[in-house]
Image 1 (tube, rainbow, N blue to C red):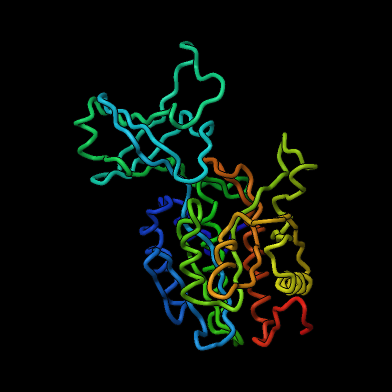
Image 2 (image 1 turned 90 degrees about the vertical axis):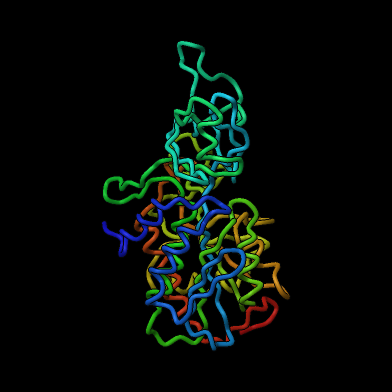
Length: 353
């Protein structure tokens, strides 16, 4: 199975984009999107927003965040070892023994996250990132400080791969896949007869504070907004489906249900899935979604939101895994939904159409 423009998705996945340092990936995305957008907007947060039919009164904002979790250097010891804190939801157990790229102020360095040999007792019991360190091969603080300073970031040195010609695996699929999806939706809408304005936003900072989504929605003031993110697949060993639900790779896009979600948007998405004879899955977000949707919802006078997610195995690890089929279907679902929008839809759940 080959995803249309899969090479571009792989380029995004290979580009470091730690939260707060998304400039390189944003420039790559902007250059790719320019031929398909009427306009590209950027803002002081670092968002990149591709626009179609900007004069339409009814505005749809699609947000896929481009940032990934990372390590932030917080101490350099006398022997040149780098200690770090979390930039986002880093799992310390997944970090042990990993190779990393330290994005130093002066140069990118290769490093490894050291681990005590099993012969010397290994790592036992509970531990966190403050118990780990990065070894770049430096012999002193003076030597490493010529390249790295406090506040510099590091990401896992992990290139994406394709498994059995059906799944993509690597670091940071959360949520460069969403960044890719919103861009592909807009690309496929280019040249179509649209009744609504479409704003495909590659947002920043979701993994840390969701500030990018707030900037984007505040600036655009959309009629409605959809976050395109990832959610937890539960189709692999040792996951409690009774607790976490039943979400599978190749099972189709996942729609959220809960207090933050506008029911009418979900109904329109379900109608699109029915037209396409496409399966959709569901997740529960009773109070909050934990995505950009939460911040977009609370901008301006309030924005009706929904959340469309890609099932993902091994969240926040170096081997996140998603289905090519699910990516394709999420793109097709959103494209079909937008093409059937009249621009006269009533989002008030207490009023009929």
